[in-house]
Length: 340
Ligand code: DAH
Image 1 (spheres, rainbow, N blue to C red):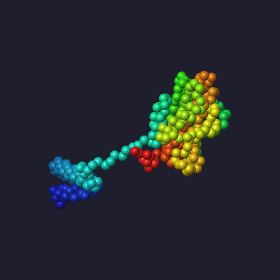
Image 2 (tube, protein in one colour):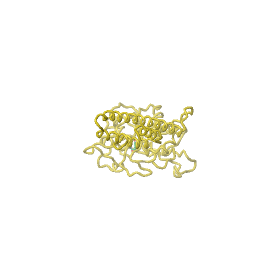
Image 3 (cartoon, rainbow, N blue to C red):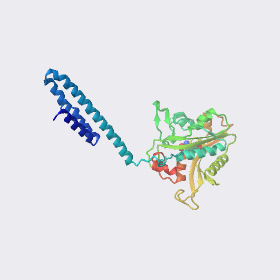
Image 4 (cartoon, rainbow, N blue to C red):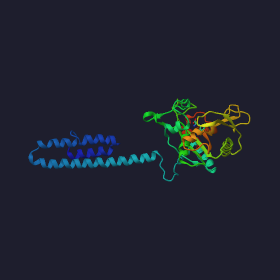
């Protein structure tokens, strides 16, 4: 078979290559050591010297012709692949674009914003505090010394050396920081994340949200506390809701209370209020004189009330969520239910 026929055969096979893989095999076969080109090159040294030059040129031309043929076919195949892809996805530039998925605010964020609105309207400052806190602010200044049993109920993540730093177990340390900086009278709330070294289950999570409230002024009484809580409930539920106080013990308040609100979900007992018609809303009390003193405020001149609202609990109550782990689990199927 003469060289011209060889080249024509090779070109025909290139043109028939059905995909990139076949073409790659063909390239190896034609341009490789034992292929069409390799054969021609191998013959050259055995030719009489005058023929070697022309034979070398012929081999170069063959290589150029085959390479051009291979590249052209590769481009054709790529174009065909692209066309097939377009066909496959049914690409049609005239169709409307697919809908853009919208994100939404987390229910904790929503309830926080609502509360911030309500408390701002009552003249409260909205404060922030560090999540990594000094033991002093988280415990000592709140009248919880190192050997106090209250430390056991707030299982703590200690961090840093010497146990001086903790992940705050509640938002109450912001009370102390605020009292150090602000001159009474003042009112403030501080929403934020808190952390407990807990085994997690449906009602316990290592990270959850609270909102601390503090009012310091002249002759602040339990009446002010109750009135404020009723205003808060009116703001959230849009109607008058009865509250009651039960005694509660927290080292940083005296007297301390558990404040219950009338169940808003039923008239005669339901699953949420466990048939009692009362829902435990928040712990609160009058600021302990020792706490005022530790923050540099004279308890003979000033008094105050404080409360610690569980934001995670409030969201769970108002949406009937039965497992606290849903809140920070990051499962979109859960979160998408709150989009609007
Ligand atoms: N800090 C307390 C806790 O997380 C909650 C609390 C109770 C806050 C009574 C208060 C209060 O301000 O007065 O367990």
